[in-house]
Image 1 (tube, helix red, strand yellow):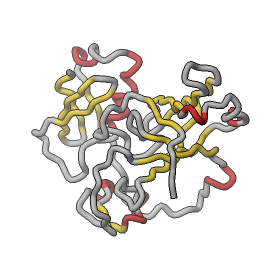
Image 2 (tube, rainbow, N blue to C red):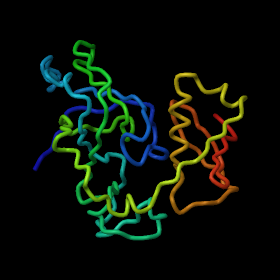
Image 3 (cartoon, rainbow, N blue to C red):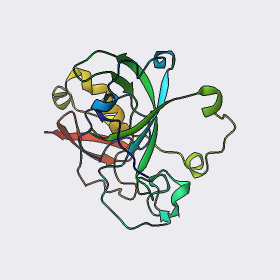
Length: 222
């Protein structure tokens, strides 16, 4: 089976570390640029009547690793192993991801052809998009569905503290997204060292921080 990307996503996530662990957690706006073979004016006809779409994409930045039937989900602290098919781990038999994102706008006539603007994506800049499908609330939403360990173990968000002098270094249009990203606790789940300084890159800013007692404190911005 041969799969050809239909395009790629463009946003301000320039590295894997710090990207939200699931779609919809942070309202970062991205745009999807189609490959030349798919830049037809009618490719998005009718999509304006939907509010959300599914993105099917490739974990293109993953290093090749041998297949493992079990993985260590961050929600379980990174130390408990679960079957790979019971998780959304990026290390899968086939490197395919699935994300539900909100449609912000559709531009049909740009130098790059039709462009789809979305929010809530958990994809790194440049990630290949394999397909786009509309989200159907009558069938894709199942209120009585069971969520397994993902609903049994709550993911704790962090209180974010940014000193005024450092906050002034962040452009106004990026502040809310950065605070949301940091509140999701981008650290590896198995690390809880209050003296360690971590760094997240977003919008070409390297935001360095520590975490103590549920509070994330920004200590430097490069």
